[in-house]
Figure (cartoon, rainbow, N blue to C red):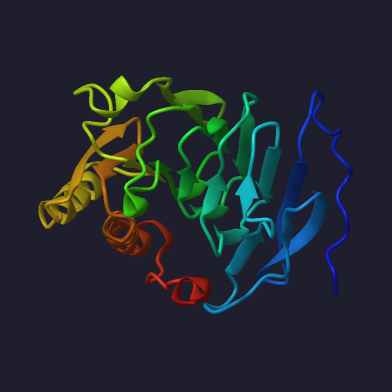
Length: 285
Protein backbone atom coordinates (compact mmCIF):
# COMPACT_ATOMS: atom_id res chain seq x y z
CA UNK A 1 0.00 0.00 0.00
CA UNK A 2 1.41 3.39 -0.94
CA UNK A 3 1.71 5.98 1.83
CA UNK A 4 -0.88 8.72 1.81
CA UNK A 5 0.24 12.15 0.67
CA UNK A 6 0.94 14.68 3.35
CA UNK A 7 -0.60 18.11 3.43
CA UNK A 8 1.20 19.90 0.65
CA UNK A 9 3.72 22.46 1.94
CA UNK A 10 3.94 25.78 0.16
CA UNK A 11 6.71 25.79 -2.44
CA UNK A 12 9.67 28.07 -1.72
CA UNK A 13 9.65 31.47 -3.35
CA UNK A 14 12.27 32.79 -5.75
CA UNK A 15 13.15 29.36 -7.12
CA UNK A 16 14.84 30.17 -10.43
CA UNK A 17 16.18 26.66 -11.08
CA UNK A 18 14.91 23.15 -10.55
CA UNK A 19 12.85 22.90 -7.36
CA UNK A 20 12.72 19.61 -5.46
CA UNK A 21 10.95 19.01 -2.17
CA UNK A 22 10.47 15.82 -0.17
CA UNK A 23 8.44 15.60 3.06
CA UNK A 24 8.16 12.27 4.89
CA UNK A 25 6.18 11.35 8.03
CA UNK A 26 6.93 8.15 9.93
CA UNK A 27 4.81 6.49 12.62
CA UNK A 28 4.84 3.27 14.58
CA UNK A 29 1.89 1.15 13.45
CA UNK A 30 1.38 -2.37 14.83
CA UNK A 31 4.88 -2.35 16.37
CA UNK A 32 6.54 -1.53 13.03
CA UNK A 33 7.71 1.85 11.74
CA UNK A 34 5.74 2.80 8.63
CA UNK A 35 6.12 5.58 6.09
CA UNK A 36 2.74 7.08 6.91
CA UNK A 37 2.77 10.12 4.61
CA UNK A 38 4.91 11.13 1.67
CA UNK A 39 4.88 14.23 -0.47
CA UNK A 40 7.27 15.30 -3.22
CA UNK A 41 7.79 17.99 -5.80
CA UNK A 42 10.32 17.46 -8.53
CA UNK A 43 13.22 14.97 -8.54
CA UNK A 44 13.34 13.81 -4.92
CA UNK A 45 11.71 10.45 -4.20
CA UNK A 46 11.60 7.42 -1.97
CA UNK A 47 10.41 4.03 -3.19
CA UNK A 48 9.37 2.18 -0.04
CA UNK A 49 10.63 1.23 3.39
CA UNK A 50 12.90 -1.80 3.79
CA UNK A 51 13.09 -3.95 6.92
CA UNK A 52 16.42 -5.80 7.02
CA UNK A 53 16.47 -5.72 10.86
CA UNK A 54 12.92 -6.16 12.04
CA UNK A 55 10.68 -3.22 12.84
CA UNK A 56 13.15 -0.41 12.11
CA UNK A 57 12.56 1.17 8.68
CA UNK A 58 15.45 1.71 6.24
CA UNK A 59 14.71 4.53 3.80
CA UNK A 60 16.69 5.46 0.68
CA UNK A 61 16.22 8.99 -0.67
CA UNK A 62 16.68 9.13 -4.45
CA UNK A 63 17.67 12.15 -6.54
CA UNK A 64 17.58 10.76 -10.11
CA UNK A 65 19.25 13.76 -11.85
CA UNK A 66 22.31 13.23 -9.66
CA UNK A 67 23.51 16.82 -10.06
CA UNK A 68 22.57 20.32 -8.91
CA UNK A 69 23.40 23.68 -10.51
CA UNK A 70 23.06 27.29 -9.39
CA UNK A 71 19.43 28.26 -8.77
CA UNK A 72 18.33 24.69 -7.94
CA UNK A 73 16.73 24.01 -4.56
CA UNK A 74 16.52 20.77 -2.60
CA UNK A 75 14.27 20.70 0.49
CA UNK A 76 14.05 17.57 2.65
CA UNK A 77 11.85 17.26 5.76
CA UNK A 78 11.56 14.17 7.99
CA UNK A 79 9.10 13.90 10.89
CA UNK A 80 9.61 10.85 13.13
CA UNK A 81 6.63 10.28 15.41
CA UNK A 82 6.56 8.76 18.91
CA UNK A 83 8.47 5.42 19.11
CA UNK A 84 9.14 5.25 15.36
CA UNK A 85 12.65 4.15 14.37
CA UNK A 86 14.19 5.15 11.03
CA UNK A 87 17.53 4.80 9.28
CA UNK A 88 17.84 7.06 6.24
CA UNK A 89 20.57 7.14 3.62
CA UNK A 90 21.10 7.80 -0.09
CA UNK A 91 22.52 5.58 -2.83
CA UNK A 92 24.89 8.17 -4.29
CA UNK A 93 26.83 11.34 -3.65
CA UNK A 94 25.27 14.76 -4.15
CA UNK A 95 27.02 16.63 -6.94
CA UNK A 96 26.95 20.42 -7.13
CA UNK A 97 28.23 21.78 -10.43
CA UNK A 98 29.79 25.03 -11.63
CA UNK A 99 27.41 27.96 -11.18
CA UNK A 100 27.00 30.94 -13.48
CA UNK A 101 26.47 33.07 -10.37
CA UNK A 102 23.36 31.87 -8.52
CA UNK A 103 23.42 29.85 -5.33
CA UNK A 104 22.12 26.31 -5.09
CA UNK A 105 20.19 25.60 -1.87
CA UNK A 106 20.13 22.43 0.22
CA UNK A 107 17.72 22.64 3.15
CA UNK A 108 17.18 19.74 5.55
CA UNK A 109 14.82 19.65 8.56
CA UNK A 110 14.77 16.62 10.82
CA UNK A 111 12.26 16.35 13.71
CA UNK A 112 12.27 13.43 16.15
CA UNK A 113 9.53 12.98 18.77
CA UNK A 114 9.90 11.34 22.23
CA UNK A 115 10.79 7.65 22.18
CA UNK A 116 11.72 7.82 18.49
CA UNK A 117 15.08 7.54 16.75
CA UNK A 118 16.63 8.69 13.49
CA UNK A 119 19.90 7.53 11.98
CA UNK A 120 20.78 10.01 9.23
CA UNK A 121 23.55 8.93 6.85
CA UNK A 122 23.54 10.85 3.56
CA UNK A 123 26.43 10.27 1.18
CA UNK A 124 28.95 13.06 0.78
CA UNK A 125 28.13 16.26 -1.10
CA UNK A 126 30.78 16.98 -3.76
CA UNK A 127 31.23 20.60 -4.80
CA UNK A 128 32.85 20.95 -8.20
CA UNK A 129 35.15 23.93 -8.69
CA UNK A 130 32.98 27.02 -9.23
CA UNK A 131 29.93 25.62 -7.42
CA UNK A 132 27.98 27.89 -5.09
CA UNK A 133 26.07 26.05 -2.37
CA UNK A 134 24.10 27.33 0.60
CA UNK A 135 23.34 24.43 2.98
CA UNK A 136 20.99 24.64 5.97
CA UNK A 137 20.32 21.77 8.38
CA UNK A 138 18.02 21.93 11.41
CA UNK A 139 17.66 18.98 13.81
CA UNK A 140 15.03 19.01 16.56
CA UNK A 141 14.72 16.34 19.26
CA UNK A 142 12.24 15.98 22.10
CA UNK A 143 12.77 14.30 25.49
CA UNK A 144 14.38 10.85 25.09
CA UNK A 145 14.59 10.87 21.28
CA UNK A 146 17.80 9.44 19.81
CA UNK A 147 19.80 10.80 16.89
CA UNK A 148 22.95 9.55 15.19
CA UNK A 149 23.91 11.20 11.93
CA UNK A 150 26.61 12.77 9.84
CA UNK A 151 27.28 15.41 7.25
CA UNK A 152 30.16 15.03 4.76
CA UNK A 153 31.34 17.61 2.25
CA UNK A 154 34.07 17.39 -0.38
CA UNK A 155 35.30 20.70 -1.83
CA UNK A 156 36.67 19.98 -5.27
CA UNK A 157 37.46 16.57 -6.70
CA UNK A 158 40.74 15.30 -5.26
CA UNK A 159 40.56 12.15 -7.35
CA UNK A 160 40.73 14.33 -10.48
CA UNK A 161 43.25 16.77 -8.91
CA UNK A 162 40.62 19.53 -9.01
CA UNK A 163 40.88 22.04 -6.17
CA UNK A 164 38.02 24.23 -5.03
CA UNK A 165 39.89 27.43 -5.84
CA UNK A 166 36.82 29.32 -7.03
CA UNK A 167 33.24 29.00 -5.90
CA UNK A 168 31.51 29.39 -2.53
CA UNK A 169 30.18 27.23 0.29
CA UNK A 170 27.97 28.64 3.05
CA UNK A 171 26.76 26.06 5.58
CA UNK A 172 24.89 26.23 8.86
CA UNK A 173 23.71 23.44 11.14
CA UNK A 174 21.52 23.88 14.22
CA UNK A 175 20.74 21.17 16.78
CA UNK A 176 17.91 21.58 19.32
CA UNK A 177 16.74 19.48 22.25
CA UNK A 178 13.36 20.42 23.72
CA UNK A 179 13.63 23.75 21.89
CA UNK A 180 16.98 24.49 23.54
CA UNK A 181 19.74 25.25 21.06
CA UNK A 182 22.71 22.99 21.83
CA UNK A 183 24.89 23.56 18.79
CA UNK A 184 25.33 25.97 15.92
CA UNK A 185 27.93 25.08 13.28
CA UNK A 186 28.63 27.71 10.63
CA UNK A 187 31.16 27.64 7.83
CA UNK A 188 31.84 29.95 4.92
CA UNK A 189 34.38 29.14 2.21
CA UNK A 190 34.46 32.15 -0.08
CA UNK A 191 38.04 32.02 -1.35
CA UNK A 192 40.87 29.56 -1.80
CA UNK A 193 42.78 30.83 1.25
CA UNK A 194 40.26 29.14 3.57
CA UNK A 195 41.29 25.79 2.10
CA UNK A 196 44.77 25.97 3.63
CA UNK A 197 44.24 28.15 6.73
CA UNK A 198 45.03 26.61 10.11
CA UNK A 199 41.59 27.74 11.29
CA UNK A 200 40.08 26.45 8.05
CA UNK A 201 40.51 23.16 6.21
CA UNK A 202 44.29 22.80 6.58
CA UNK A 203 44.67 21.69 3.00
CA UNK A 204 42.16 18.87 3.34
CA UNK A 205 39.35 18.82 0.73
CA UNK A 206 36.98 16.64 2.78
CA UNK A 207 35.27 17.49 6.05
CA UNK A 208 32.75 15.64 8.15
CA UNK A 209 30.71 16.13 11.30
CA UNK A 210 29.05 13.27 13.19
CA UNK A 211 26.45 14.01 15.87
CA UNK A 212 24.99 11.62 18.43
CA UNK A 213 22.44 12.26 21.19
CA UNK A 214 21.95 11.52 24.07
CA UNK A 215 25.54 10.72 25.07
CA UNK A 216 27.65 10.84 28.22
CA UNK A 217 31.31 10.76 29.18
CA UNK A 218 31.49 6.99 28.67
CA UNK A 219 30.36 7.38 25.06
CA UNK A 220 32.89 10.15 24.57
CA UNK A 221 35.73 7.98 25.87
CA UNK A 222 34.64 5.08 23.65
CA UNK A 223 34.72 7.32 20.60
CA UNK A 224 38.06 8.87 21.53
CA UNK A 225 39.48 5.37 21.93
CA UNK A 226 38.12 4.56 18.48
CA UNK A 227 39.83 7.66 17.09
CA UNK A 228 43.21 6.54 18.46
CA UNK A 229 43.05 3.79 15.83
CA UNK A 230 42.62 6.55 13.27
CA UNK A 231 44.27 6.32 9.88
CA UNK A 232 47.04 8.85 9.31
CA UNK A 233 45.17 10.57 6.46
CA UNK A 234 42.24 11.60 8.72
CA UNK A 235 42.42 14.42 11.28
CA UNK A 236 39.68 14.04 13.87
CA UNK A 237 38.50 14.97 17.34
CA UNK A 238 35.47 14.55 19.60
CA UNK A 239 33.74 16.66 22.24
CA UNK A 240 30.58 16.51 24.39
CA UNK A 241 28.17 19.44 24.69
CA UNK A 242 25.14 19.04 27.00
CA UNK A 243 24.69 15.41 26.01
CA UNK A 244 25.45 16.02 22.33
CA UNK A 245 28.51 14.14 21.07
CA UNK A 246 30.25 16.00 18.25
CA UNK A 247 32.94 14.38 16.11
CA UNK A 248 34.75 16.45 13.48
CA UNK A 249 37.08 15.06 10.84
CA UNK A 250 39.21 16.29 7.93
CA UNK A 251 40.76 14.14 5.22
CA UNK A 252 41.53 13.64 1.56
CA UNK A 253 40.14 10.14 1.00
CA UNK A 254 36.36 9.69 1.00
CA UNK A 255 36.39 5.94 1.65
CA UNK A 256 38.71 6.21 4.64
CA UNK A 257 36.75 9.14 6.08
CA UNK A 258 33.42 7.34 5.73
CA UNK A 259 34.92 4.16 7.16
CA UNK A 260 35.95 6.04 10.28
CA UNK A 261 32.47 7.52 10.71
CA UNK A 262 30.93 4.08 10.18
CA UNK A 263 33.16 2.58 12.87
CA UNK A 264 32.05 5.29 15.31
CA UNK A 265 28.41 4.52 14.49
CA UNK A 266 29.11 0.82 15.05
CA UNK A 267 30.52 1.73 18.48
CA UNK A 268 27.63 4.00 19.51
CA UNK A 269 24.60 2.23 18.09
CA UNK A 270 24.44 -0.72 20.51
CA UNK A 271 24.67 1.69 23.46
CA UNK A 272 22.11 4.22 22.21
CA UNK A 273 19.63 1.95 20.42
CA UNK A 274 20.36 -1.50 21.87
CA UNK A 275 20.93 -2.80 18.34
CA UNK A 276 23.98 -4.14 16.52
CA UNK A 277 25.02 -1.99 13.56
CA UNK A 278 23.51 -3.38 10.36
CA UNK A 279 24.95 -1.71 7.27
CA UNK A 280 22.34 -0.51 4.75
CA UNK A 281 22.28 -2.87 1.79
CA UNK A 282 22.51 0.02 -0.66
CA UNK A 283 26.07 0.71 0.56
CA UNK A 284 27.19 -2.63 -0.87
CA UNK A 285 26.01 -1.84 -4.41
